[in-house]
Length: 183
Image (tube, rainbow, N blue to C red; front, side, top):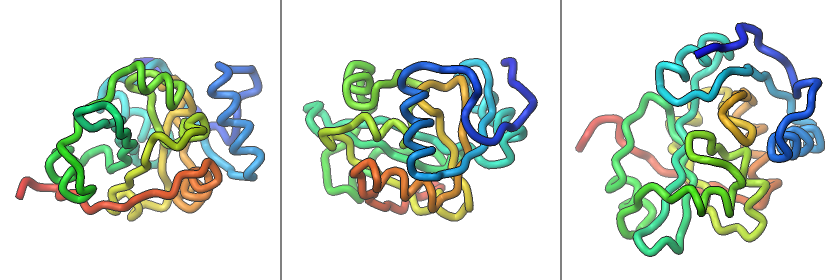
């Protein structure tokens, strides 16, 4: 993967996709500073580790999930190095076992594609169809990362600023404690 070895402060000078520009606009409206790294589409954890080395912060795992009926949607944020087991999350949320939501719902509610989802896209969920769920382990770090629309850039912002951003988008997170090791 090619990665720009430079960490930038703020948005790029050139225009990007409408989704990415909308996210940058919203960050600016809220006076939220962020660092950015530009790169090719990041598909693997190895790619994410390379991005982490330039960005100077851990990559967050973002999973777009739904119930079996496809009527309830969740965006789970958790540490990138932590394994995900749906039964632990479903139990804490008090719902049936969750699975990965399809690309159609991701595009409809968050205007993004698989592999690119992050809490930054919650500004597009104007109907509040997606519930934000955050693993408390993620909050141990001072910063949180995410893709601004598509996974060709990664942003790092403070934990408090991310929480302020999602609240301004009308999403109050629900917190869970997912185990690191199988129980």
